[in-house]
Image (tube, rainbow, N blue to C red; front, side):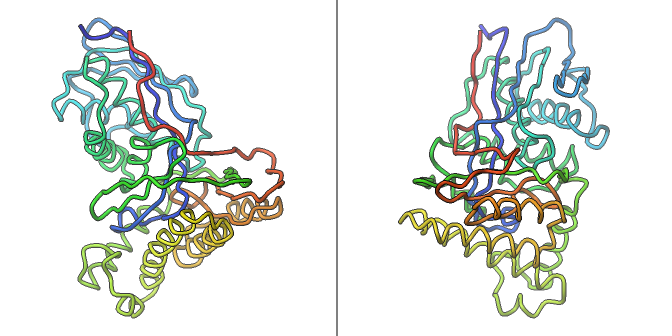
Length: 352
């Protein structure tokens, strides 16, 4: 007999390094964090689903059999309706429900509240339908479903980084993801007397409303000129001959892939000095080659550096959001900074 109530948690994520590489067939090194989105789904009579976004004081009710079409709605409503539609299209026998969504992630900070919401909704609604919590193999397919929600229903042309990090995260480990094969390799993230913090720049980040989709289109144009499927396959010499700004976009992707490899190697031997330098280099590339920074982000980087960060870079899609800093021994984090560490991926907290 299926449960009458399921509570699920979708975590936010921080990407240690490897930005804008996922949709370019490259490498990234994200990890799930403890903060995230909690979704409570309770069985309800009738044929409707009601979703209450408690933090926003908003509500949406729609027919389970007709959640609408892509593009009909915006924001969290598009996520909720799109998740229901995609789960149903994948064969899930969903039940009418009263759903409550709560989050302790800073809104617009680039910590992937969107992937956390989609993952939490999926696990809560599937659990209410009596399905078992998905295993590791099924989580890759669920990540693709969550990505379709964001791409088709919300209109943000993201890759799979956020969804895989949210669904596959492990305590104490970052995830080296190869987006050519979707192979996920846990990498211990041991920082000794240092710690990672994120500082919200104060400039709200939204994929669909930022330059994110424009950058993705530029990468696609660069691929067409180079005759490759993804920029990660490009020959560096050929990429360097591209016209601007495509040359700089390709250079960021190719050098960022190298930085991911170097970060994994540095973590394996505990070389945290190199790890900090790689964060700085990644930020410089995102700022200068990818043009993804804004003044508020640069001020946040400066604040972290002044506080004793040995490396700092923007995280997420850029154009606002949060900055990640690696604080040295004894450094005091700036006010409003949030300590982050690798945590469990999306999971069911309870069912009854």
